[in-house]
Amino acid sequence: MRADDPVGVSDDPGWQLIEEIPKCETPWLRVMEEVVATPTRSAGCRWTVARRPKAAVIAPRFPDGTWLLIRQERIAVRRTMWEFPAGQVEGRVTPESIRATALRELREEAGVEPDGALIELGAFFSSCGFTDECMFLFLADCVRASLEGATPDHDEAILETRRVGDSELWEMIATGEICDANTLAITARLVARGLIRPAVGV
Amino acid sequence: MRADDPVGVSDDPGWQLIEEIPKCETPWLRVMEEVVATPTRSAGCRWTVARRPKAAVIAPRFPDGTWLLIRQERIAVRRTMWEFPAGQVEGRVTPESIRATALRELREEAGVEPDGALIELGAFFSSCGFTDECMFLFLADCVRASLEGATPDHDEAILETRRVGDSELWEMIATGEICDANTLAITARLVARGLIRPAVGV
Image (cartoon, rainbow over all chains, first blue to last red; front, top):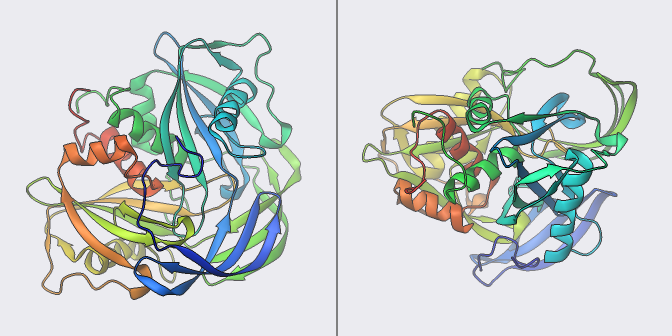
C-alpha cells in the first residue's frame, strides 16, 4: 500500500490543479473551489471539493469467528449506528502511521488488540463526487480483549460494543441496521478476498 | 422506504438541533457548525456537518447476468473510477422522486432502461462522521439498452461503459480497482440479500 496512491491503482496522467480558492476551513474539513485539468478536459473544470484527513477502518474478528461492532452516536445523521471501529490518521500519512491508527482505534474504541495478523484490504473513497476522504481497510484477525478495556474519546460517544457471528452481521446488513459506508465497504472487500462467508442460502 | 427515515431504522428519541451557524454554501454543499442534543448528551455537542443532497445508486444487471459499470473522471480524488451509476435527487425527496432519479441515471449515464424490477435495497450514509449524505440503493434487474443510448451530462465526464460478470466484478473489488463507497456498499447489500453470488472459492 502506498500512502500517495492509496488504492494501489495507477491512473492516466493529465490531472493538474490549475487554481484553488479556499471557501472554509475547520480542523477536520477544508472546502476548496478548485479548477482542475483532467485527462479529457485539459482546459480545466471547476469543482467544489471537501478535503478530509485520511482514516483507517478495522474489522475485528475474535478466534471464535465473531465480529466486534461498536454503537456510536453520529451527529451528522442524527442516529446511533452499529459500525466497525474507525479513526483518522494523525500527522503524516504513511503506511506505518495508517497501521498505527488501526491499532489505536482497535484499542481505544473497541478495547481489543490483535493476537494475529492485521491484514490490509486496500482502501476506498467515501464519496468521490465531492470529497477526497479515503479510508484504509484492515481485517484484525484473532483479536483479544486488552487489559485496559476500551478508552474512547468522550466526543465520540461510543455507547456499547457487541459481538456478532457471520449470519447476524449479514442480517444487519440486509435489513439496513448496518448502513454506514465503512462497514459495508469492508464487508464487500472481505467477500471479494474470500475472508468471510456470504449469507446462508446465497 | 420512508424519505424522512431513509434507512428504515427508528432511532432513540433525544436528537435536537439547538443552534446552527452556516459556514459556507454552494449548490451541492452546505457546511454548518451545529450544536445538537443527543440521546446521551442533552446539553448539546458542537459539530461541523457537510449537508448534501440525497442520491440514488443503481446496480444494472442484464438478462445474461452481466453488470454494467461506468468509467468516470472524479475530480475530488483525481482519478478515473469504475462505478455503478448514481445521481442526486432533484427537488423534494420522496420515494417517487428517488425512484425517478434511479431511472433517470440508468437512462442518462448508462443508456439502459429496466425491463424487469427496480428492487429497493435500502440506503447508506457515505461518511456519517461529517456529512448527512445518504444514498438510496437499487438493483435494476434485466435492463436493456435504450433506443437513445447514454446522454451523460458533460460535467460528469463519463468516458465509457463496460459489462462484467460476477467473477470479474469480484476481482475488481478484490484488487481495489473498484474503490468507491457506492459500488462497494451496494455489492455488500446484494450479497446480504442473496442477490449476487460471492467470489468463486468463498
